[in-house]
Image (cartoon, rainbow, N blue to C red; front, side):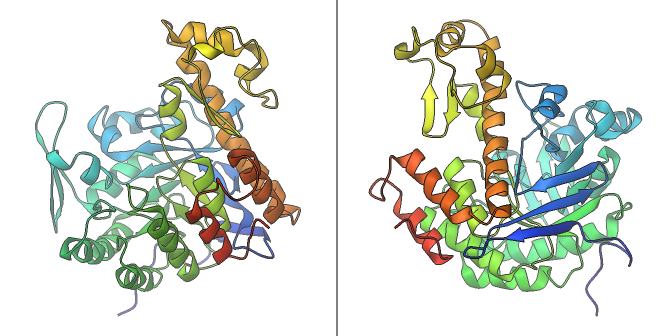
Length: 401
């Protein structure tokens, strides 16, 4: 029997590849989505309940963000898809004119594992709000996402922690394939809401390869690499990413879920990934940490009390243009405004990093960009660069010598 198709014939490919690195797997392109084009590689800020914590939708747009995330589980619980749909979908509800991606709710199988029970019909959660039981099936996940109206929707997958071993990993992989077929069948708006499959298989190369073989038989607009970045050893992480990008179609977007550290972003762009998301830049801002090209600044530390320089003299974000490290240090002692200002800066840092990578790929100098990035981040030479980074880059032809 033929594999299900996510859409009828006719729609243009979602991804337009504009340039590829002559040495590594990095590529620059454009996602052609209903709410406008999105340059990639792209980092997508996470707006769990309709906003990224600490910033407004207007501020995200002003920073150049053209796609951000919403969470199906949380939005489906509160305020509920019916209310959001009455507001014109999530775009209207949060006053966001650009693109949205909604996750399926599958990750909550890990993050809310004490409240979840997985069966073939779906996942039964006990609501963290009122304690009532909720069934999130593949069909219900897509129904909620259709109501939210995101431009990219994700299949419901059976998610296990990346450090899990044994038969549960294989069970989750096979179930994710079956649930993909149910999600494809349930999607009522395939031409407006692009359904992505999510590759599972844990850290087992054979299981991940089997999942890739099965899911790439389905004619979906894009693919996500799931089940990683959950605490596994970095050497195993990058090998699973490379295995996935080796076998995924060249002409469709590759979304690496849950990755947001700067070094990880650079390495995984080199391995061939196009899209990323993570709560890291907004979460670390709430702890007083500012992202910079040489790592991070913990602005709560007393050394910044009389430092009147901006966080980063080369950053054009509103925080760096208007405020000093000393001012932010003083605010962090008692005012939540500092967390807001740091969030703006950290998101700007992530978006600027992705933009710089994209420009270097278009200009044919991505390997040089990688070398300069690592020299700035780790202080020159190879001695301080993590071995896994050197191994991963060497696997796609980039050396630091």
